[in-house]
Image (cartoon, rainbow over the protein chains, first blue to last red):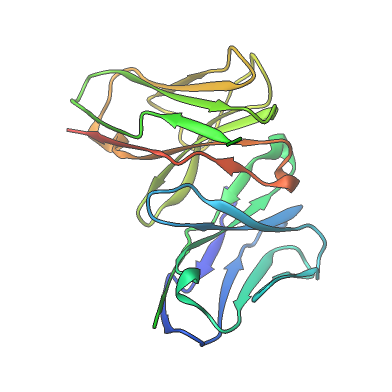
Length: 111
Length: 112
């Protein structure tokens, strides 16, 4: 069974601070995705990375896929209250397009 | 709006009762999935389908059955509900995992 461990589990910061969330596994994935989930809603896709070492930027969010395609990080610059939510990483192996999800990082950004 | 629609949004069942959760997508996606989300456990795959008329077991299939008679619909059934099946259930669809999943808004099920 492939496992994806995220750290930290919880993060409470003030507006304007920077933060990094990590997603680690002992397995190799063909793709790695990040989702954000708000209370009472389903996860929403933020980004997909497919190449080892790949870096993608989405406004204040920077995503990186590890060189060995076993880990990933999400960095948020100058966090805003609107960034509050549960961040989930998910690894794909290509088999039936199934994804394995991490346990999530719950982020709270306060004024 | 295009996307994934789940019904119902909330349901309370008594132990031993049965029910069916409905999932419909209008994006012509081949792949559909049912996950359950529990505190501290993340999203766990129950069953999935790679196309109309196909189904396969995921990580936690026991106590659930599924059917995909039409490409746009994926049904999840509980034949005899148990308190351990209290959870939030999410349906998702995908063209390909590289393109990501589109999730429904979830069904919160409580079994008493």
